Length: 279
Image (cartoon, rainbow, N blue to C red):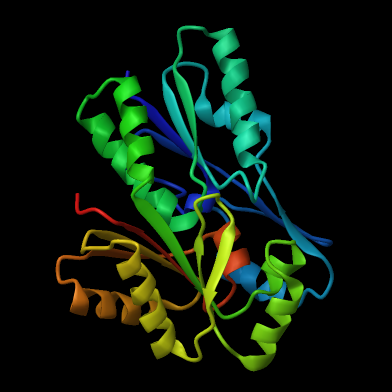
């Protein structure tokens, strides 16, 4: 039986035709409404709603039951989650794994903490699908996926830090200063799975220069790049063109953020996942 891949919806992949796959939805919550990060959600409508909200907003991770449902009652599973340093999704997935393995000791279930989110998770899912298609044994698929994760990275470029600050992900003072000055924030997912702010460029051109500078320093050589944008297709396209100009062999895909990543990236935000090796 083929190995099933499961991720939480922070990967931005709500469906994935290349493998047996399920996405477990996170949720965006306001005082009036809850938005489930699934294929039925109108993400642009959610973003429009959130512009009108002045009270508290937040997010919640999938619970153990939801992870169990996605993992199913039989077969081997490899799950990948948003960084455990920003969400309880990994802990819930690990509890689901423990319960299912106790009920079916012959099953193999692995849970990988991405220490990241969004398009970096997408790269790992794509790599998992390739390993599974090559008919490799479970232990080898898990080992190679974890090894590949050591060679993937995430950069984000945000025009607003309001939601991150409201939820304790970044310093509130930094968010207020960035908003007041109209500057962008370029940062990375750190090795510990936290958000590390690196640069504060003014304007889209300097932001692209900052992104390319970070990619070079982290060893990008022209391999896979996945750019997720929140209502900023023009910015994503311009970045893709800049990357291809310097790295003609770049394999770039542009996609829209789903609910969870849209909430934190906010309108105009870009999230870039890439590998530092050419596959």
